[in-house]
Length: 122
Image (cartoon, rainbow, N blue to C red; front, side):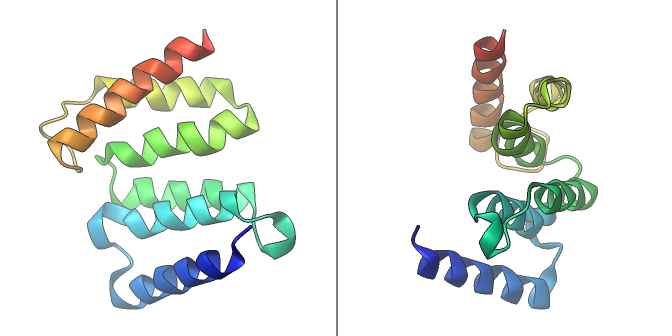
């Protein structure tokens, strides 16, 4: 594990919190959730903390597809919470990609990937 890059990323997350924790619809909380998933527990990683960060991101940016897509892909797939996994991905698919938080190309990607993830789980 390259702990130096993880520590540097966490320092950047903390700096964004100081400047504007609601930046880009809660992107910082999304990033912190990934941090908690990626880091081993002995270094501060925690799936429950990651789940809480995803909730904060969704609260701040409820129309950002990335939050629910990422929660399904990186947390629920890992924890085996399949009902929640499917619910998040179905929500992503149901959104209008040209009207929601992220840019249109990213939203299309999230939707296409959601379809693939659902197809792989059935």
